[in-house]
Structure formats: structure tokens, C-alpha cells
Image (tube, rainbow, N blue to C red):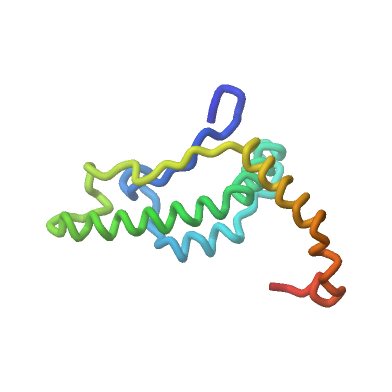
Length: 132
């Protein structure tokens, strides 16, 4: 994050960097889809912001998790003698610059395109409310 609180990039790390329990991309993505901080402590607006930011960036986070797993698999093949998750040569696995403003502009343009082409008019009431 920058000095004004805007996110600059997303990144993935090896397990040893943060000491967390390693979860493969599929498992982490399942958890990500249900992620929500909705309690007031320590600061409700910050908790809601974190939840919203993860939802906004979710497709990119999912891609980064798959990339992370691919790099770990390749690293394990290159260095089979050690524990890939404890290998200090592998710390930051991937980074992706992000711009909330750029993403918001693209989303607004996409919504405008759908509205201009009348895609919503072609969806009947049943389809419009059907669950995925």
C-alpha cells in the first residue's frame, strides 16, 4: 500500500516467509470465496474495506495462487533434495501491480457496453435471478 492507503500490488510468498499453513491453490480459493470480515473490532470500516478489496481483486488473487503452485512445483523438480516450503532461496514467488482506479474504469466501461447492447433486455425474469 502507498502512503494514502491505496494498494500497489498483490504478491505471493513461500510458506516459510509468513509461517502459515500451506494450502494448495484450490483449497485457498475455496476459502477466499467465503472470506468476510464483518465484525466491528478493531475498526469496522477497515474490516469492510479489506473484505471489499479481496472481492474486487479475487480473480487476480486466484490466478496468482495458481501461479504460486506452478512455481513451487517447478522449484521442487529443480531442487528435489530439500523442502521447497523451507527453501530460503524462494521467498517472493510472484507480484502483480494493481490499480483500483484502472479496474473501476474498466468495469464501468464493461457495464456501459452491456447496457448499450441491451444484453439485460434479452434475459427473462427466471434467468436473471437464477443461481449459478
